[in-house]
Image (cartoon, rainbow, N blue to C red; front, side, top):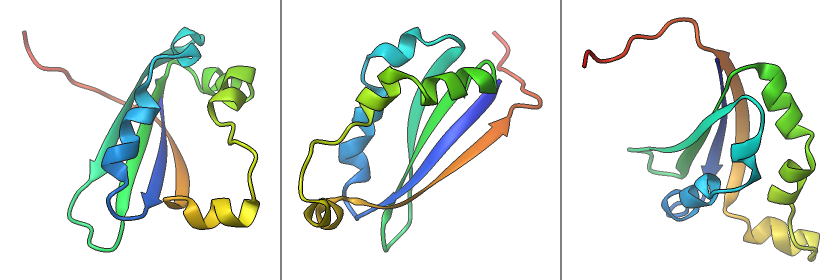
Length: 110
């Protein structure tokens, strides 16, 4: 299993508002190898918010298929607008994608 995390730094006050946008039902749920998406918000940062979008995949090739799919392009499409205005209005400051392979796990006893 692989976890693909998009760690997004954003303007203060936006992480809580935007987190639900990443877990809306949609075509992602029908992609081969998709397991789940979760969002987490890092606490105790003064200067910005940090939202992590964690996507769980059976295989890395399944994630790559999602990334090149029409459904991905539609999910990430931005309305046409003035590019300079869009940049200044965006709550996003930066992002970093981190891909890890799950090596071991343990679960709670029933």
